[in-house]
Amino acid sequence: MRWVVAVALVVGMEATTNTSTSTMGSRFRFTSMSTSGSTVAVDEDLRRVFEGYLAGEVGRDRIEALGAGAVLERYLALGEAMRAFSADGSLEDRYWAMRRLRARFGLEGMFVSEDAEAEAALDRRAGREAPLTEAESATIRPLAAMRVEAALRATGAGNEDVRALRVATFGEAAAARLDEVDRRRADFARRLEVLRAGGGRIEDLFAPGEIVRVQSLERLRTDALR
Image (cartoon, rainbow, N blue to C red; front, side):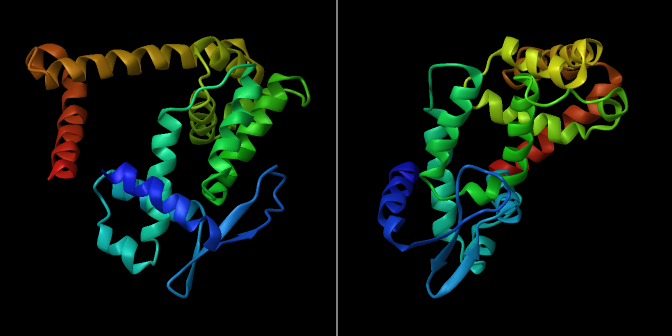
């Protein structure tokens, strides 16, 4: 039911959205939204609040106090649309198709940094910019790289697409190390699902150094579900 309400609100708010143009090189606009006489900045800080809400760390009352309840409904509707998203063509074609879909919800300001990084990564992959130097590869922000990959995977990018991007950005050796990190992360997630399904004991599924992490994750999951 939440998604039905969210989509209805998206349609109903189209006529009341005030739009300002970004000057950060994006091909799309991002917005401020007027709700009940106050203007809510639709930016990355607000997105972090919404992510806290989805993780069970921020209450709906805080979002309403910010005057951002209607914006949250747009964000939830965007999430539903992204889960159903599919597109054909090259990795870059699919990325821009995803951006066109997202622009319909008026939330581009929430993704400014992520989009700039994704566009730069696509440029490097296409040879429009020089690859990073060895020094830059060694110091590039891991979180930024993760956001770029997440944005591209949202367009339907597969493992081969992501690996080609890693090679273009970091080089073959670093890409291989990231592949190994992916394998370990996938194995950890698989074992965690087995544990949650009651398919084994924590002591049998995880090494002693992993058990503390698993226990912390399970406490957070339990708190979020309350």
